[in-house]
Length: 385
Image (tube, rainbow, N blue to C red; front, side, top):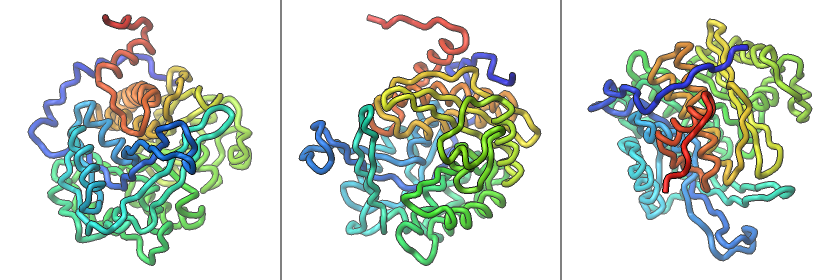
C-alpha cells in the first residue's frame, strides 16, 4: 500500500534558497468580503455581521507564506476601504502585494454571504461576484515579468475563470491575463491549478470548453476532487462509475480505485502531477479527510490514514491543503519525496485550519510540525501552562 511512511521536520527545512528574492509562489484570483452573522441569527435576520476575507488563491498564498515560502498575490480591487482592507490583510500575513491592480473606487468587490449550519441544517452561501473589480483583471494590467521574476510555481483556480461566465462577459478577461502571465514566467516555473468547479458560476459545458485546453496546454500540477471530474468529464473512480459518484453512491476507496482515477485524469490532461483531496462529511460538525497524488511516471501516494476533524469552519480547508502540498513540491521538487512531504504537510495544515473560524489559515509552522509528528509517530505535547 503506497502511503506516506515517514515524518518530516519542516521546522528544520533549509529555506535559504528563497531568501532575498521575490515570491517563489504567486497566485492570481479574486478575494471576496465575507459576511457571516455575528449574532447567531440567519442572514436575513441578522443586524450584526463579521466581515472577513474569503478567496481560494489568497488562502493558498497565506498558507505558504506562514510556512516560510515567499508568496505573492495578484488581483484587482477597488480603491476604497474594502480594497485597502484586503491589501492590509494580505500584507499582514507576509504576502507580497506588488501584483495588486487598483480599480476605480466605485467598482464592487466580490461578496459572499455565508450561513454556518449545524446538523442537520446545512451551511449555505450566496455569491455576489457579478461585475466585480477582480473579474475585470485583464491583459496589460500587470507587470508580469516583475511579479514572476523569481517565481517557481504560479497558481490559479477554476473559480477564477468562471467569473466571466458568471458576469455574462463576452471576453474572459482573467483568462487573457493568465495567458499573458505564462508568456512572462521564468523558465522552469511550474503552473498549478485547482479545478474547483462552482455550479453557481458557470454550467458544466462552459466550464469544460474553457478548462480542457487550458489545463492540457499549460498546467503541470492539477488538484481536483473525484466529484468534479465525474460531474464535468464523466471520469470513473475504479469500481465506481461517474454516475455513482454524482449520485453520492461511492463507498470505501481502495488504492486501486484512486490509482485508476488519477491515471485517467493524468492521461486526459497530460499533467506532471494529479493531486486529489477527499472529504468524508459524517455530520456538519465532524468530517474525515485524506488525500492522494500520482505523477506521470505512476508514482502513487496516499495519506497514511483517514483522519477526523471536529469542524469550526470548513471554508478554506481545501486551499490550505493545496498550500501544504505545494510546500512539499517547492522544497523537494516534483519527486516522490516532494509529493509525500506535500501530502503530509497538506493533511496536517488543513485539519488545523478547519478548527478555526473564517477562511484564512492562521496556523503556525510549529503547530503543523507537532501534528505531523503526532500523526506519524504518535505522542504529542501537553498544553503548556
